[in-house]
Structure formats: C-alpha cells, structure tokens
Image 1 (spheres, rainbow, N blue to C red):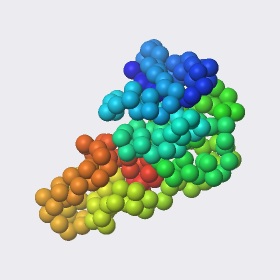
Image 2: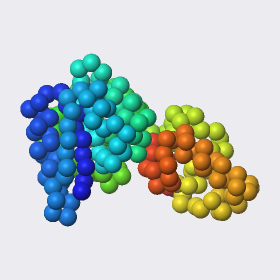
Image 3: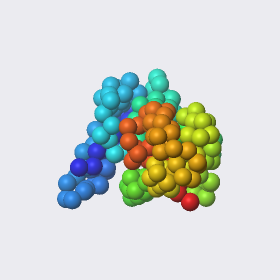
Length: 212
C-alpha cells in the first residue's frame, strides 16, 4: 500500500489534501494518508519509521517552519522524498527548498490534477517544479559531496555505485582492492544515514547524482 504523509497547519486544507491523495490507488487499494499540523507533531508521528513513500510539506508552518522541518526530515529520513507545498512560489523560496533537498515544489494555486501529477512524478523518482521553473538545472553533482562530507574517494565510489557497478568492478576502475571498496561503501552508507545500496542510490538521486 502506498503510504503518504501530509504536514499542513490548516485543518481544512490538510483534510482536503489527504482526501485528494487517497485517489492515488495502488492495485485497487487507496493510499494510506496520515497528517500532522506542525513540525513537532510530524516528527513525533513519523518517529524512526522510514516506511513512508512521500511527505507533502507546507512551507509556512507555525513555530518551526516548513524549510527547517525539511532539513530535519532530510537527516532523519534521507530516502523519503519531500514535496513542498506553498502559496509562495517566488524563485527564492523554490530555490531554497530545492537546495535543502526537496524533491519538488507545488504551488497551492495548482489544481488537484496538477498536485497528483506532481506526486506521481516524485514517486517515480523524478522531480517536479512549477512550469515557470521547470527548465531550472538540477542540483549540482558536487552538492552531495559537500552536504554529506564525502571524501573524493568516497564520492568516486558513489558515482560508480550510481552507474550500477559491483564492488569488484569499482575496485578495478579506481585501482584498489575490493576490501578497500567495501570500506568506502560502509563509510558512504554511514554518511548518507542509509543501510543498503538501494537507499544510497535514492539519496544520491535526490541530490542530482544520476547515472550518465
């Protein structure tokens, strides 16, 4: 079952979003959608549960704002895509959200069909931006190295992981032993706060690191 989470402080808007998202049926089953009104409530409800397919997050939350919560979510649940929602769709707000690791940005003036299309795009591993920003370049490949403090060797190994190469081939490419590659891979997992290769690739993809 598809599991979605909505963080929006206005009850009527939150309930409307949750109802709309239930239309995203999988194998005939409606999506399971939960919601929260504020950052603290969202973090408490989510806990350490990474079994969430997507988080829809309002930028303008009381107390801890949506962008600050986005930063916390990227650290706690790096493999879960976050789609930002806001009445503010000015270039700076959109850029800040994408720089902080959002998988997309939807204006509150959008139609329900546009929202659902954005959710589907992000769930498929893509990113969504309002039409006026759709041609903006993806995050630079170097961002992930800086954000997660990867060494040059770890970054090279991660790039090769994204290319789909097994440890043996990575070792041949960079001229080290397979054991050394395993050490690098373990360090990468720790830096990205993930436990396996699939999760690492999801995080890499969210930060603009794609197979060439």
